[in-house]
Length: 394
Image (cartoon, rainbow, N blue to C red; front, side, top):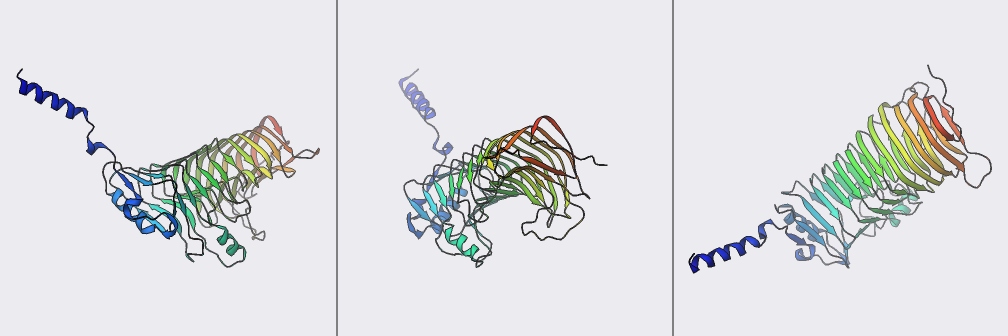
């Protein structure tokens, strides 16, 4: 082999050994698109310009929001579809404007029709909700913005980030499929109105794991046309618990295959709850509530076909058909004597409700907790405390 051939071969091998630049993901830093990051200047335009550049990239781009800085954002919509999977690395802090900035339904950050999106990092999104809660409590703000909204986002992953003090809901999922939420922290005061942690509708295959949710409303809310949801290894409280519904007020309900397992509830209004309006239509079926720990929860187990937050709803026949609900291995304490409440309609009774290995005591009382069950067909297996008796239905 001649020297020239050897030299050419060595050069070729060296070239092959170097990773192709074209195969590496490109990084898009918001500072390169003129973000200021002082917490006072609105960086919405810079974030949108960064997104548009990254969204056109085919190399699995990473949009970087650097740590150690605070970015003020007004309402921003990140529109898809994008040319390839995209990651947002949130290490800094995003804050909402600290004034009443909209009178219409809105989201601070909205992702629409983005497939294969990952939002991760150790950063925070703060909705600065106190001014909104005061406005609502004074009956001056009927509409408040959510913090982080995803619509038509399939193969979505949200990991590690912190969400704080939304004006209303913290995360909303609408028409999303294959969603993974992992180690997300959501915090708001227990008396902050309607600050649900994660709310979903018209979605499927949602997996929520190892999250900490402390809010003034439902930690997780599962609304209609939602299937195949798992919430596991998470903590809830303060708040209203993990709720399915409310269902059937305006729509025909369709919810099935919901699992809540290995979760801890502390100081919440309810633990796990299915709630529907009188006269509703549709169905809710296929529930497993398993291995749950309750600490001073007002009512740990609830099925309520008479949901009426105002307390003066007219009596209506019919209701959402609730069936195949399994409460298994639920232990702890209730802050009210009624630890189990299963209230179903005579015209649409609940069916296949099963209680197994339940042990709930009334905290700080020697009197036992109790259970109320009406118009529900089901069974008890093993130890069930408080004692629960299912009526005989025709």
